[in-house]
Image (cartoon, rainbow, N blue to C red; front, side, top):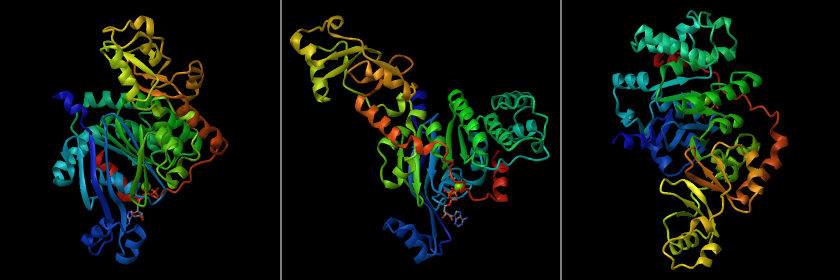
Length: 431
Ligand SMILES: Nc1ncnc2c1ncn2[C@@H]1O[C@H](COP(=O)(O)OP(=O)(O)OP(=O)(O)O)[C@@H](O)[C@H]1O
Ligand SMILES: [Mg+2]
């Protein structure tokens, strides 16, 4: 039962739309259903379709990035997810609870207990110290003082601000203030952390530094995160999956690797054009789904059938736990015949070239050239989770070579609209 719950998505977004300025919302919803464009709807009905029929779900522990040009609807979408903005249509399920049908009190409880949000402008209290800002959300939740102190101090040290806890925000640089915003969210220990362009107000060098530190932190903490950005580096570095938005619509959701290898259309292709995959990608982000696998209890006949059905000349041999034992060429099995009931695995199997999920792309090439076979990707317990063929690897590296000059110092355009006062109020309300 508990196991079951764990596999359920922590966040489900179903057909969410947000329309601003509609004289007649119903009519605009109809127009959306009829497939009318955002421009047409603005001209004919004077309404802005900020978010358009968006659906996705996020797994526990997943880092989900929302990316798109300015005005594509990222901030509106992320705000509807905790109803800082009420969606016009659709449902949002957080941890099994439909928050779209909730009353104010219930909603406040969900925000307080399950979510935290970090904005571009950190929303710190100027008159409170770093420590007081960090513990603020815990205090409003009624967490006892001793626990508050432990959690806040641990969060402060996690973001590298140990020793600064008694300073006020004005004594801190922009990067440090943003760390306080993150510390506050971490102290909260939310089930879902929402971040809307948290690093885009920082100058490029500090931003890179924060991204790297955050990538490390994220690997340690494993907190479900919904992260808005228009910085491709950031998206590729941090994201497990990336949703690309255009005109309010989500047009592709994919892993960084899929996005670069297989952009859904020209718009996405333009986004990922500058990507330098070798810098961010890992075995896990470019591997393809389960290759032909064989159980070490299979007869030769069953093993050959499995390989044939995958159109594969080799098979990966797994034990009962799904752990990789080795690989076997189909020709070896054919040699020993299909009627023997037990295959002498020790004789027919060779060692499979393999790698861990986190191995960076640039370290995969030397591994791959040592063997004519695809690389097996295994998790930390030795279970086979996917494979990387030579051709996948070459495709990714070729894309990288074409573009690597373009990316170097190309800073993302700073198109963030200014955030108004009510947003700072939002931060305080939900922290
Ligand atoms: N309160 C509002 N009233 C009317 N239109 C709005 C409102 N808020 C947003 N919009 C419109 O909705 C669309 C999406 O805006 P949103 O701020 O969500 O985009 P964004 O992707 O976050 O952009 P940016 O990268 O600039 O932050 C835009 O066309 C915007 O003008
Ligand atoms: Mg925005």
